Amino acid sequence: MGTINHSGAQHCDLLVIGSGAGGLSTAITARKHGLDVVVIEKDSVFGGTTAFSGGVLWIPGNPHAKAAGVKDSREAARQYMRNEAGAFFDVAAVDAFLDVGPEMVEFFERETSVKFVPTLYPDYHPTVPGGVDVGRSILAAPFDIRALGEDMARLRPPLQTITFIGMMFNSSNADLKHFFNATKSLTSFTYVLKRLAKHVKELALYRRGINVTSGNALAARLAKSALDLGIPIHTGTPAQALLQEHGVVVGARVRGTQGEYEIRARRGVVLACGGFSHDVERLKKAYAHVKRGGEHVSPVPQGNTGDGARMAEQAGGSVPIRYPQPAAWMPVSRVPLRNGRSGVFPHLLDRYKPGIIGVTRSGRRFCNESESYHDVGAAMIQACQGERETAMWLVCDQSTISKYGLGYAKPAPMPLRPFLKNGYLVKGRTLSALAENTGIDAAGLERTVHEYNQGAVRGVDEQFGRGSTSFNRYLADPEQQPNPCVAPIGAGPYYALKVVMGDLGTFDGIHTDVVGRVLDVQDAPIEGLYAVGNDRASIMGGNYPGAGITLGPIMTFGYITGRHIAGVKTPQLPSQPQAIAQDRELRHAA
Image (cartoon, rainbow, N blue to C red; front, side, top):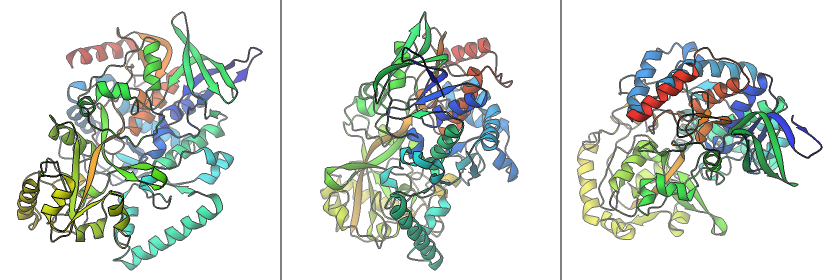
């Protein structure tokens, strides 16, 4: 789609800058309602951060939960979000999300190649009023990317460090349990053998896995839907600057394979550039641990350098840093790879397993390790306040690492020697030796393990109550009883792995109204300019209530924004003056 006139400029109705879930859901919705849409992407591959993600959407009242008979209510979800967002609870945006989210799911499943399946994920804080144990999170269904044809090569591959020889694991617990149990269960062993054989065949034929899951499946399904609608996705085409005439954004100057040119958009431009996880200067202002000189290593795509925020500011938009937790924190470890390269491993699973604890340099535990990555990250930042380095060490004994692995190191029978040799893992015959080898305070570590073990032998975490919620237990080991999250640390040798701060994307971002129009510092909309995805400030107020709280709102507001730009009224939304007035009151109160 899109036309080129004699001046060399391309013309369309809507230009979308970015090809993750935010950009593509907006583009697809607008195209379905009659607009001529063009998508540009600075990287050589499409899919954005979505392609690296778990592919989960948090949508209270979603059709899959209703079909399964899950008991939930809009009122409970709203109460939960109010409790989670606190002072940053945005009435208009939350109501729009709750009202339109289920409709968005129905639209994409009915009109496009996007399909979802239910999950058993509990809310991350299920004991908070309004929280639930199951039903609000749905997952992108697996997808055979051969349906993309030649464009299969342009799909962003999954994050290397969370694959096994390039093979993806479903982000639900069901798939992973077979790999953990492969040496203990004939059923799991057979399952793993079949998966490996199928994957090796795919590598031989296509040089990559073709049956993708999680966020890779969602990115592929969205791209397939966009391409089927005739929406071009121009990869390797970064936006250089917005075009603004008489205060109205009318397009962008971009750089493609044949140099710079203009794309003029009659209905406006949508910023969907993925947030500012790799914008070093903005991170120094936004992240407390970076302000004090600490390390931050994000596993999100390197192209997420805050382009959307910069372009919004240049057009007069507001990008305040308001949230106490301005990003979705993810504890990560640096993984030495071949040829001097390094990768980033997000610690999504190991912290939940019994017999693994996390300590600071003092040797002391500082939180419930089985809480969400965001909560553990926030606690880690707080625990290291006053220190330059924000880090923790995951510690376990030989039997535990053999059973579950640790970080990028896989469980037995996979060898640990390469990880000890390259320094990823540290080993000590005794706790004191381990402390000496890592720089942890020996007395603190020995005292911590002794205190932890006193309760752990009974399946109790006396300090932090680990295993007390359905979410704590969801990713733990159900065979460990009476508490699937807690087991004592036994005889040596012992292992430690250093973990630093990272993120899954930014929460703070461009200030918009409910329909996604970029607002200036006076809360006035900048005509022709919109923001979606991680470019737009999260409605969660810097908290992380459940699996999929980024992608759920991202696709819901992409749907809302696409409809608004196409001139289609969404009855559930407040009038524009109402929305802006409500938002102004809340911002001033916060």
